[in-house]
Length: 306
Image (cartoon, one colour):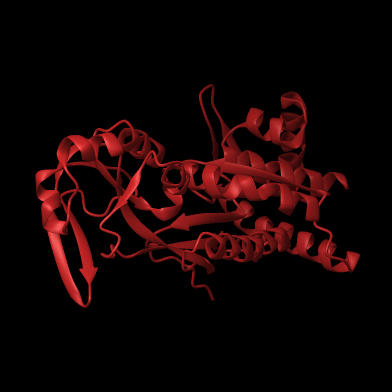
């Protein structure tokens, strides 16, 4: 890789991470080397790209404009390299943002197959139940659950999963088994990020819709905590089926009101706006579409996809 191209890649990572040290770690370089290369790039261009202070690194106006132009160039170079090789071999690093619980339960177990197919590719999974800033984090593709905000990003539907309500056997023994949605008004609810509206849950059966008010005894910000609370017998939780599949199989949770539907949760792959998706990002989404659909069929769950 020539010096100018390396400098462009380093600048893009410093800009997106907001840190010389973070970019150095990602690129396996020393922090002084990164700083020196950026300084040389600025001298070559004749403009300050990064404003440095003791506490933060930020882009100048010139740096912001420069970044918007070079990122499309870098993405095009990656695409050209891939096509020139004339093979399916993928290289470099793929950065994927995804929810922590979904990533841990569904995606990580599938990674061995994807990595075996692409031995020259490295993958960084950025897992958080809070939606990441894909541009700042330098994300190539984000896996999103639920409704998507309006965006100029290219989006691909990966699949759908059912929303369910669950509780522990000990809780049901103490509080009784709800026979209909309205019975839930007398129960304690656990509301997590996979919950619908915090104050109400909606159900449908045979064309009839029922909305019930729930007593939200515990609110948590991550799905794993909601499931753990349900297993501990604190109350009834709602989640996508993938979020509690293991507990249902073990019997530590029981699905309630299986004849009533709470709707579906869509899973999308969202490519970072403003640039052409990386070949590795497209390949990863295609892999998830196939593997999650296969897994859904194995578990008897419906999964529609494009």
